[in-house]
Structure formats: structure tokens, C-alpha cells
Image (cartoon, rainbow, N blue to C red; front, top):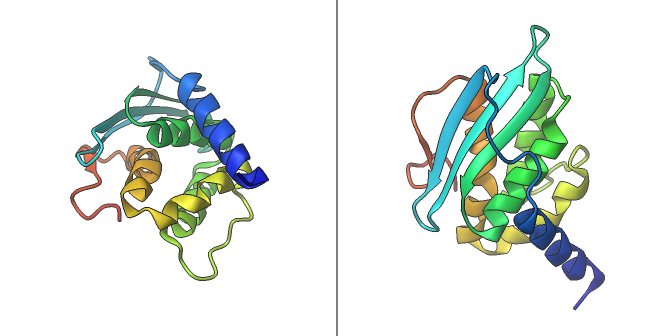
Length: 154
């Protein structure tokens, strides 16, 4: 196995076994729910933003496969303390990367680049991107459940 594959596997398993920012966020001012019917992944995402649009805290709860849970965990770590505009920029870079978009920029992704390989497995793209689409829905206060089966994701 290559060093990158080892890193990918280690990071995914670590975040799946011990997800960061997992649990309720009672003081949240933005919420959204997401569902991936193909894999059965379910997520509830909660964010607390301040008056300047900075994500003060972000948490998730739910259940799902290792990729879905690890993506949500790593996403919360990457976005905490960022302005909502930055979060949207990171979302776009992440989405373009996992979709295999030609010339995708990944400058803001850091460790999130370990998810680049999911583009080879379309069903796994939905797992990796569910938390991200749910986060975007929360930022825009969308009330409908985000579903990977309704055209909102690949």
C-alpha cells in the first residue's frame, strides 16, 4: 500500500472511531438535516455563527459509513473559526475535488485532500459530500432535508 493510501486509511478510521465535534449544540443558530438513502447515512448539522458571520462552533450527530462520518468530522475541524464566506469557498473546493472537476483548486483543503480518491467511486462521493451539502443548507437556513438522491449531490 502506498504512503498516501495508508494516510487516507488512518485518517478515515481515526475520525470514524473518534469523530470530532460530535454531539448536540444547544446554542446553535443554524441547523440542517441530511440523508443519503444509498448508504443510509443520516446527519444533523448545527452551527453557531456570530454577528460577523464567523462560525463559532459546529457540530454534527447521526450515523453513517466511515467515509461519511470522517468527512463530517474533518469538515467541522476545518470550518470552525472561519467566516461563512470562507466555508462556502472550502465547500466549493471540496466538492470540485471529489467530483473530479478538471483544474479543481484545493488550496484551502489541507488534510481534506485525503478524500480526493473518492471521485473514483461515485457512490462514495455521496458519502463524502453529504455533510458538506448539509452544512451549506444550514448556512442558508434551508428547511428541507438534504438528500443525495434528489439531485442536490452527484
